[in-house]
Amino acid sequence: MSLILFNKPFQVLCQFSPQDGRATLADHLSIPNIYPAGRLDADSEGLMLLTDDGKLQHMIAHPDHKEAKVYIVQVEGVPDAASLAKLQAPLDLGDFVTKPCKAVQIEAPEWLWPRNPPIRERADQPTSWLAITLQEGKNRQVRRMTAAVGLPTLRLVRTAIGGISLATHPLMPGEWMEVSPKDINT
Image (cartoon, rainbow, N blue to C red; front, side):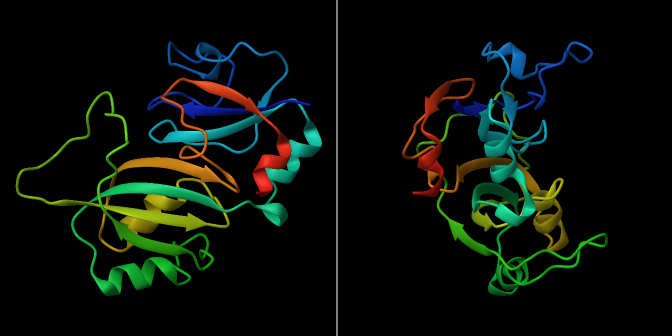
């Protein structure tokens, strides 16, 4: 049984099959018979788990067993107490209501690699960083949540899944390593 940590670069699709000249997982990983346990959209970066074990993949990705996931998010604007409270409470996004989560403003991470290409910045609009911890992970959820409170996402990086993080397992974009499946629950 293999469990692979992968730091997904910006604009890489979470699939192995080729798609119209776009970068995919196959451009970075050549390990046979592994599959993503969860996804990140092409515009997001950061930690992904891949495995060759169907039961482990199900345990990591299934909503009944969701591991906490931590995202750091650069947003346009500066959050106030009300917008942080809205992010943390159940938030109606139209097609679903989010579960409560943790959302705090943080300093810009010094350890974070530069994004290629860089985010667009507007001189007249300040940016801020948030750390958001979710127990769920619906399609584009963090981006939709920040937009719903008036703080559009400029950059989104998943930094942790359960007990595994880029802090404990430092990887640059495109790098991967194998770990023990029991590391998830630490």
